[in-house]
Length: 122
Image 1: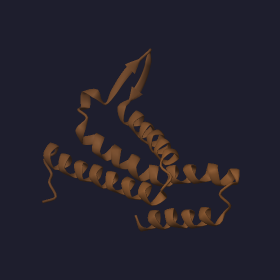
Image 2 (image 1 turned 180 degrees about the vertical axis):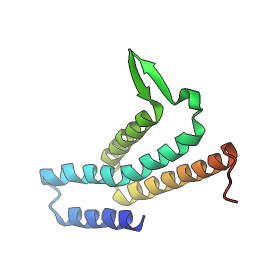
Image 3 (image 1 turned 90 degrees about the vertical axis):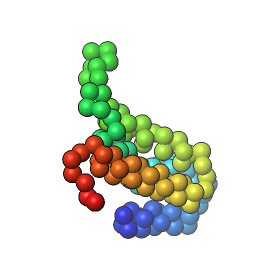
Image 4 (image 1 turned 60 degrees about the vertical axis):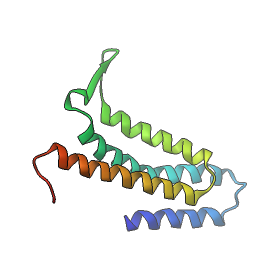
């Protein structure tokens, strides 16, 4: 977690020292935030959905193709975060809201694990 925060702030510092009118700045900023923060929030979605989604709904067929629900949730989370990074210009607000949402999802995963399984940490 500390490495992830360090990478985000190092990338933010490097991007802020670059000229903002360059094409590389306009492309690298949303892409880097999406890759770095998306891995955190998408993993939190996977942990939470593992215990919330019933086993019967973990996969489905659509147009003769087999899909996994968690895989679709993982990629949808990445796309939604990318759209949020493009729309929201304040990078500190992006980082804060992503950390809060991932913390909430990890807490939901912890509570759901304690309720659904026979093993509790407490």
